[in-house]
Image 1 (spheres, rainbow, N blue to C red):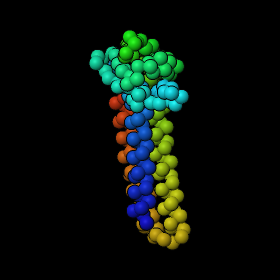
Image 2: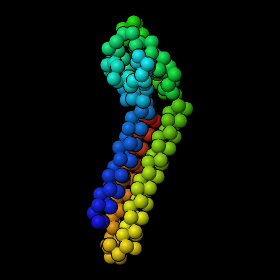
Image 3: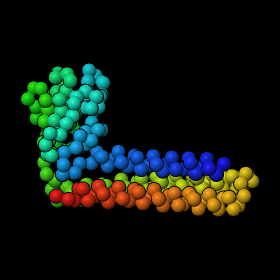
Length: 185
C-alpha cells in the first residue's frame, strides 16, 4: 500500500522535472537551438503542424537556424508562423530554405528571460509540492481506514518529504543552469 503511494508520488514528481526540462528547452539563450521552434506550428494544407514534422531543422552556425521544408510550397506558411510567434525573430528565405538568424540577446532581454526561468521553476516546485500533498493525504486516509499503522504512516510521510526535497533540489539545479546559460554572453 505505502509502496504504491510512494511510487505514484515519484512518478508524478518525475513528470514535473521532465515538463520543466521541456519548458526550459523552448527558452532561447545566446546560441541557436532548434528546440525554440518546438511549440511553433505552421498551417499545412489546413492543419496546424509542428515545424519538425514538415521540415528539416538544423543549426549550421551558432547564430543561425536553417529550416528546409520537404514541400517548398509551405515556405510562406512557415515564415508566417514564425513571424506571428512570440520569438521576436524575422525569417528570410531563398525559395528553397528558410533562414532564421538569432540576434545576440540584449542585457535587458537576458534579465527578462532569467525572470521567466525563475517563474517556470517556481511553477514546477509548486507542482511537486502538490504531488507531495496528494501522497500525504493518501497516507492519512489509509491510517483512518486502519489499513496502515501510525508508524507506517510516519515513515511514509518522511519518505515523501525526502523525495519532495530531492526533486525540488533537481528543479533548482535545472533553473540555475538555464539562468547561467542566459546570463552568459
